[in-house]
Image (cartoon, rainbow, N blue to C red; front, top):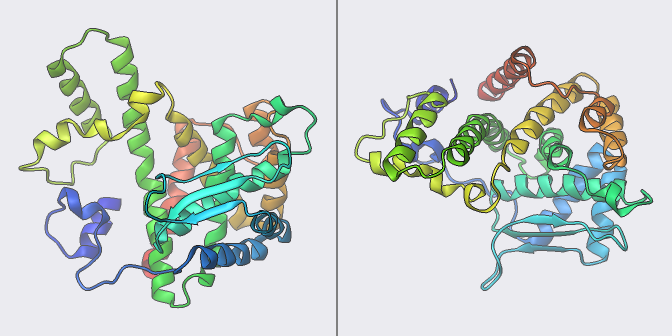
Amino acid sequence: MLTEHRRKRLGVDTMRPWDGSAEPEGVEPLQPFETGEELAQKTTEVFSKLRPYFSYCLETMQEMKRMDLESRKGKAPGGYNCPLSETGVPFIFMNAAGTIGDVITMMHEGGHAIHSFLSHPLKLSSFKEYPMEIAELASMSMELFSMEHWDVFFKNEEELSRAKLEELERVISVLPWIATIDKFQHWLYTNPGHSVAQRTEAWLSILDEFSTGATDWTGFEEYRASFWQKQLHLFEVPFYYIEYGIAQLGAIAMWRQYRENKEQALDNYMNALSLGYTKTLPELYETAGIKFDFSSNNISVLGNFMKERLAESSVQ
């Protein structure tokens, strides 16, 4: 569905590998901000529209110079939120260049920052060392919550719709990729001593299982056969990646809750993050007002919800 939607938007007969991130000819890239200072200011404004406490957190970080946002020569790549245990005021590092991706990254890391603030009052440091399934729920939920107020970045309605559509497409498309990498990891580490040919065969079989087949890779089969190499987790942190899928599904459930009752959803969000790791993951998700449930029935409900949101965004 997603690939077909993009194919129609691009006006092409066949989708090729490079079309997945393309825009129709003549469409200019979105430019939501110019400087790191503007990104921080606009993000603070978005957060204030959600909850004054959220903007207070970002304002405190700015006052304490806990943000390094702009890209510059010689700067390390990447983006992250680094909790600082003594003050409880974290540090956000990223390489912003004025893109919609930077806005999403800032919302994401801002969610992590809120988590750091809310869990800081817990008495033991180990209580603040929460697992990825709840840490990423905090950040991914904030991406989706914040979309309601992205008009701060995009005054033009068409550009605002494009920005929201890009976020929805990213959220949907990352899930099958996570499933692909997770299953491939299990094959790799339960089949020691395999040959390159066996590994390639296993990869292509798993990739086909979670792909639509709607993209034509003719002439680029060699690249598709080694496409798994782009995921650094396979090399650096074995068996770590499925957590993003768990949290992404949780974030969709949080957004669904938010669309039904905004204030209650934000109350639940803050209550869950305030617990750090003093409760089990199912209990943390329950406090957040959602289920730690990955049954086909629950995923179907979340999938239908996202289809509806994608259809809404496409119509605008």
